[in-house]
Image (cartoon, rainbow, N blue to C red; front, side, top):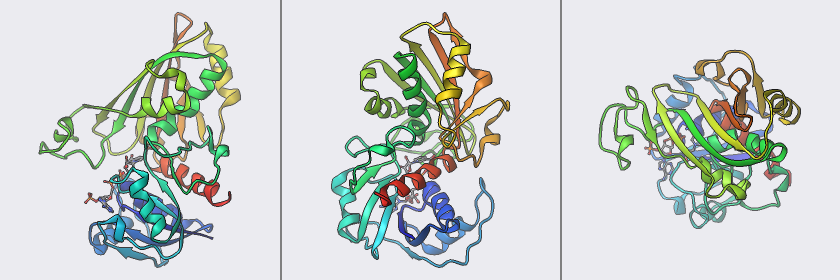
Length: 312
Ligand SMILES: NC(=O)c1ccc[n+]([C@@H]2O[C@H](COP(=O)([O-])OP(=O)(O)OC[C@H]3O[C@@H](n4cnc5c(N)ncnc54)[C@H](OP(=O)(O)O)[C@@H]3O)[C@@H](O)[C@H]2O)c1
């Protein structure tokens, strides 16, 4: 049984807690956030995206806003999901305070990073690791396959993303200028770190890949529009064959279901390749559209990475 703690009980923390509470291989020991436990319990049980949830399992709920003072009762893994801490010098406090391993639910420039389906078999026992971002989990496994079989010269990625809690419902001050604007009524261009996350795995793309996030007024789901300049000429038939042959069915689903965003809710995949939307221009400019449930799909990978980390 894997003893688990969660720091940051927001969207990712709560969806993760629900999955852990249902999974016989995990035991939820403690969750921490900066808001009161009544609210934490309420939001765990009622969720506008995923519906109601009930558990009879008890676990500790704490309200500590200082990572240095946050104590863990001999937990195997802390999932760091606050969105506040990304550096090893901060996350090491979880280890000092009773956790054996830490998995960060975000991209970090300085941590060893594992993306399931790409490099999880290279895990060598590090105590603090990153599961990268939701969009990197969606994109990098597919880019790795395309690069291996066709070569990628350059790419532009646009993540068409549901809004998140760091945006405002109505126009209001925010430290990021466009995040200040109403998320429910606007199409909002924001920055994306998926290009940097991709370069970690495909370093030859440094300076040749760029990304943009577009936040849209839906509560769940992401559609990643990738435009890839290939190193060699190919055909749609060959591309589809490569995708069907080399994607990992645990993390990738090839869809001919004419999905719209609400259809992919609660799908556990890192990427859902929309086969109907694959386009090729002049035999070497490839467009792939990749869906993901940015919450549930990502949480599924956090649990997979926990399994790898704990069984090392
Ligand atoms: N949402 C996604 O689609 C998604 C997907 C993959 C990865 N991620 C990453 O996962 C992380 C969390 O994202 P999220 O969407 O779950 O954010 P969220 O809903 O805002 O959750 C973060 C929670 O942590 C709390 N918190 C803030 N400071 C804290 C502290 N010092 N100690 C403990 N808790 C603290 C926040 O409280 P306040 O709200 O009061 O600040 C909030 O309840 C981010 O790094 C994000 O980039 C998000």
